[in-house]
Length: 516
Image (tube, rainbow, N blue to C red):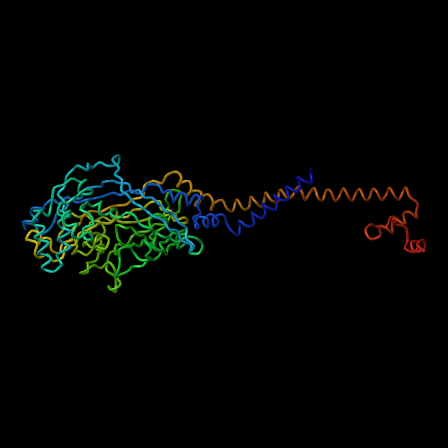
């Protein structure tokens, strides 16, 4: 029974010592992050991603035009806007049709849907504002650069509906249900130009809310490229572009970011509303609760023109001023441009004919605070504004000519990370705090336990050796006393190579005489 117990202790001791030594070389932190890198089904990282929490808030802001009549009659050369918001939604997103590919990539379908949160809102969606008639103004902005004959046909067609450039409408209709008989009449003749008769802001933003995304996973691509986009809908450039094809460059979808973040690393994030990816630059190291985190910000020159301009896929035609980025390819080629809210950081010409704007970096700046080991976002905000761009306008009447060279804010959305659920909080704590801070203690503990377990079988082994030695010595004395010398000598011959002489006084010559 003792031998079985010692064997069990010996095996367990070897296991503990092996674990202790190996964990000093291949640390538990590296093991668990490598496990996350592979996104193995059934593991916590995979499960939490495949069933994502709904903790992304979309705070929507719109603008009420307070001087629409004075602007249209020529009394004012500018639009005076009043910000209304936030109107709070939750952006729910799902990951479906998940497929692991042989080239160490993962393909899935992401669907994003805004859900109104009545419990968080103080603004009534039935409140009314003076809003731009998007159905009318979008067509004017689009056809203003077309040939004279086409402009005349469109102008005649629009006059049939007797629309006004501004209209009194509820917040709900402006965001969700800005249906237009004019667009409904246009749609059969130009379905690609008029994909929907609903010009509601959020309806347009989420008109295409489903994408098939392939991302990089596994040791092949490493921590820096973890969940970097390989392609969207089979193309390795940004969606909706055909002539100019901006490639993905370590770009992430805003769900997972690279592991083991560095200070010289630029995080690139793709958001479909922007029609492009945006870079976040390291700003500072911060302490967010118990976590050590890196704080990244979106530079104010993000929407500026690049040098040389021929490499700028977002410059627009004609070329937009700094602070605006062409996103028309995502919106049926209508002349929309993205910017920071209230034209923050843009050239002065952009806001020259807009009054009431109050850009504020604290409110309108975009940032990400991420735990530095896992890359999990702890706090974050992405704020972008959609604007309608008017160039020279001819052939649409005097009222509409007032919009010439105007950059009109339509709405802006501030995406913010809400509190994580308990499942994510526990996972993040274990992965980023518990394991890294306890791995040395665990390694030493395994070694101590292993040595402690090794002590008992070792002690019993030497104890058994001593007992056997004493038993042999006792047997020798017994035979020396009981048997005559010749028997002793014979026994000496038998044990000559393994035992000391049975009679220490016997000389070698006597042994030789007796043998002969």
